[in-house]
Length: 115
Length: 109
Image (cartoon, rainbow over all chains, first blue to last red):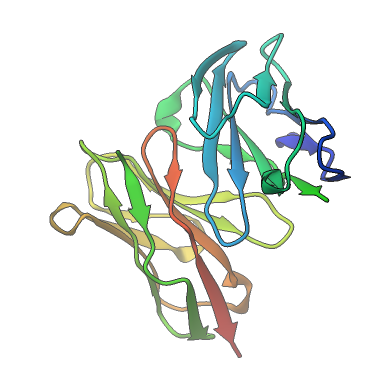
């Protein structure tokens, strides 16, 4: 399968714990995006990488959230000291070098449940 | 700031009937506009996009959308829906993809 893959697909954790999600984009894609989606809402933009550089961060990304893409390939999204309000689906997407193609390819998401 | 409004949270359509999902946007310049579909357990899939040119764009699965600048709209249409079209549909605008809240499409047999 050459699509965007995310791991784990589902994570249940207790409030206050740290969690980390991983995203493997399509191999030739240099742009990588993280979104958050809560029930009944559309995806909300969190952050964006071009290669290893984090070029944009949403104000939704509090200081408990950090994202990295150390070698310009896979990316991780870490949430420290989780809160119940962090419960959501975290979506990763990637796109190729010619943004004018306009298509983001999404993974199936990592669902976080904070108890 | 850019924003997207999808006025209909749920829409129920009979199989074989025509469909129109509404999308209104707010954007400072000529917008990039998209429609995505999300089926249960699957990732978001691009149906179609508008960047410039012909205001009627064709997408996959028999969908089309029309960009109307005067109405700030980008409504999605399909002449005859199939049971497999039941899903969540999202309109999005801009380079960083600001999404609407989605419209849940239910297909009646």
